[in-house]
Length: 423
Image (cartoon, rainbow, N blue to C red):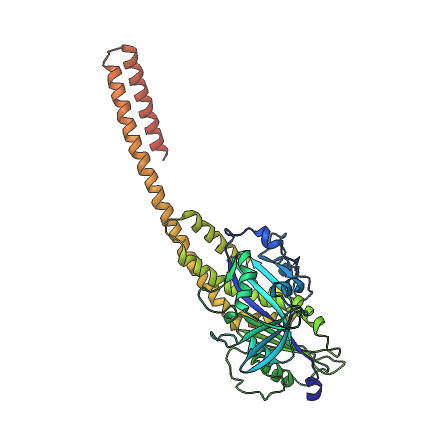
């Protein structure tokens, strides 16, 4: 089995970059004009979950667009089918950039999913090492003449995302890749006899080392494994994955070793599930930031943010039990929520929402009291002016006016007494 697994020609995956955007700075229409729509049509999730990615649905929380690889290659100046290189630690590795997917959510968070293929896990480790703030990686592209030209990955992403009103999720000089979520997979030509085989491979993929490397340091607390059920006909397993807080790693048995087809399958079936969990996580972080920056007394902004939070809490989250008809898919989603502690983050945002609501009520109460005081002041002035006018009229001594005044006063007294008695 080891020889068969070593025959896998390449690896694939997605670098999922968290982003933020301000809808006031850029209209939704401009973002929606990018590329082609990316509807969720997989049978792995239920219809209500698919509706969450449908911009025409009342239940929509976001939508996706596919950015074609030709456009990405052109923006990079690649002359040879997206052929790229990364240099790190004195070594140089080849990789290819395929299409990208951009998902934008109503809660002012977005994700750029870069599809990559590469010949070894060392390549991915050179490109992206999640959680490490510094990197010695240098990137190169092949131009039309086949010459290697250096380029800045950060500069390219700024140029691609900046005009769209999208920016790094966390401010400051940190890299886009610092908080990237890494979604990887590799193909094996034969099915697996034991779960332990898949566990070892997916853990190594999570560690960004070769699949057949000795499995070491497997005591990480945020590691979860999910496997397919054993096939009765083959008496073997087809796929398994390792879920962690910053990576999800699959191994899939595919006799054809069709990397492009598997990349499309993973984009359609697995990527929406991962994005739903990340959307919940980063929405909580985004709301915390927005509330911290909220200016006191800005009632319109306060009301908009409160409504956004209420909609997210009521309709914007999904429970694993409602996600899919397949137990394995529900397990993967539940593990993604657990290792990222999303439930606690949503509870924290809910507590902040209650504080925000109380703050809004205080501001509205103070504003109402101010209005009432002004009305009372003007009312007193008006009454005094009316009394003076009546006194001036009565001073003329006209009997009809006196009788009308006395009658009106009596009727008002009766109406007041009647109202007090009714109360």
